[in-house]
Amino acid sequence: MLEYDMIRQICAFLYDKCHIDPEFALVLGSGLDGLSRAVEPVMEIPYSDIPYVPTSTVQSHAGSLLVGTINGRNVAVMRGRVHLYEGNSPAEVVRLLRSLIIWGAGNVILTNAAGGINSAFLPGDLMLIEDQINMQGVSSLTGFNDDRMGTRFPDMSTLYDEDCNTDIMSAAKKVGVHLYRGVYAGMHGPAFETPAEINMLRIMGADVVGMSTVLEAEAAHHMGAKVTGVTLVSNFAAKKGGEKITHESVSAASKAGGEKLTKVLLEYIS
Ligand code: HPA
Image 1 (cartoon, rainbow, N blue to C red):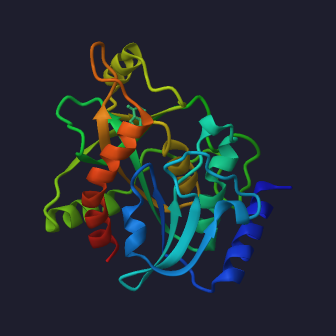
Image 2 (cartoon, rainbow, N blue to C red):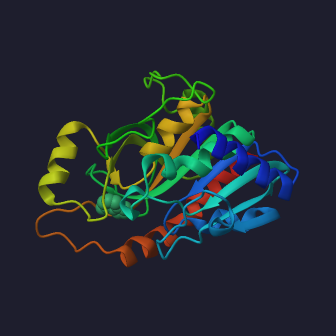
């Protein structure tokens, strides 16, 4: 079956369950689930109950789609995401997000936890993603291009939307949270990086490193959605003699810093 046909079926399935059109699609990363508590729920459905959608195998991800409102704005919140390293194809990684965009979500907000490469960043800091480096070795636009979703060769010079970035910076200022700006490098994972890889990424111009987001941003931009992204720095990126990085420490740190992120996004969405 064509990817587009699957996506249309997912849309129809979701719309049948709740007749609201989301304006915002949010993807909440590891430990960043706090925002879902601010949603006035209309429907919540596990990924495993949505046709054609792979389920998240990451323990700290709830693995469900929450649809409802935040301050009167319709939102669809992905509580956790699926990754390439779980064995999903690039198309599968972005399938649900693409469905939410076809459903009507013209604004996409991507969040993630990542390792800080920029020496100014401390665990707990937030960074607005200004640009990205896809180091996953594959694009979410790989394979047949369905023109109903977007063009074969999309421009990526304005991947993250500058107007949305300005608005999110203002929102952060308003709630008194400092937002750095920088470049997100998306690695394949699931192993954390070696010190040599972090050196390479630093030389390439990356400020933070994670294992998600880049495929989602590509696909959403391909479809003409406005994309913004915020990273929570959960740890110092790997370095010789540095602390060991574990999934547990990353999740714990992002839970702690997640409140700031929630505050910024709530202000932004309102
Ligand atoms: N590297 C890759 N992904 C991550 C990291 C990291 O240091 N921290 C959180 N996600």
